Image (cartoon, rainbow, N blue to C red; front, side, top):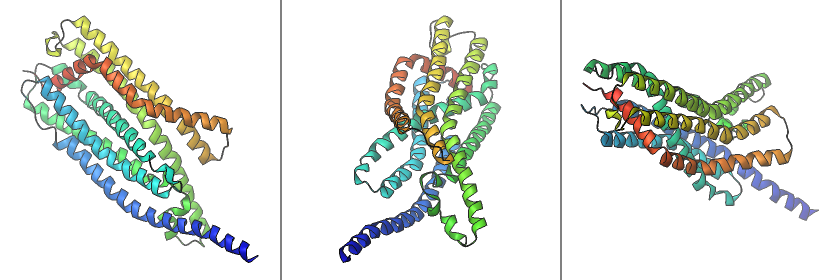
Length: 339
C-alpha cells in the first residue's frame, strides 16, 4: 500500500508542476506577445507609410523591383515576429521534447506564407485603391502623390484592423479556457459570470478560426479581381506597350492571362491548405467527433500542402516571372506617373 501511494504521489506531482509552469509561461508570453504585436503594428505602419517615399520621375524597373522586394521583406519580418513567439510557446507547453525540432519547420513555413500573402495582399489593395489613377497615366501632377499617400493610410488602417482581430484571439486559440488570465481575475464562485466569459471566449475562438483561415481566401479573391480590373484598365488606356518593356500588345495580353491563372492557382492552394484544418478546429469547438481516419487524412493533407507551398510559390514565380514583371512595371508606372 505504501508503495502504491508513493507511486500515485509521484504520478500526480509532474502534472501539478506542469500546470503551474503553463500558467506562469502563459502570463509571461501574453505580455511578450502584446509588446511584439504593438511593435508589429508600428512596424507595418512605418513600412507602409514612411518607407516608400522615393518617387523617381521616370520609373526604372530595376530600382522599383528592389524597392518592392525590400518593402515586402521588411513588412514580412514584422509579420513573422508575431508568429515566432507563439511557436516557441507551443514548444514550451509541449510535454514531448521531440517536438522541439518542429519549430524550425514551423518558422520556415510561417515565414514563407507571410512573405507571399503580404506581397499579394499589398499589391491587391494598392491596385484597387490606385485603379482610378491608371486613367490619367500620362497626366500626373504632384497632387496625385498626396492622394496616393492618403490611400496608403487606408491600407495601413486595413492592416491595423487585421492584426487587432488576430491579437484579440491569439492566446485563446492555443490554450484551455482555465489558463486564461481573465478567467482567474473573476471570482470563481460567481458561476454566471464565468460562464458568460467562457461563452464570449468560445465565440472568439470560432471567429478567430474563421478569420485566420478565410482572410487568406479573401486576399486571393481580391488579388484575382484586382488583376482583372487593372489589366483591363491598362490595356484600355495605354496606347503603347513600350512602357511595359514588351514588343507588342498581344504579348502583354498573354502575360495578363497568365497572371489571372496565377490568381486562380493561389485560390486552389489556399483552399487545399486551410480547409481541412478549419473543419477539424470547428469540429473540436462544436464537440463533434469524426472518424479517426478522416482526421488523420485531413491533418496529413494540411501538413503536406503546407510543406509544398514554398515550392509551388517558387515554381510559379519562375514560370510567370515575365508576367509578374510586366504587371509590376505597369502598376509602378501608373503610381509614379509619367509626364
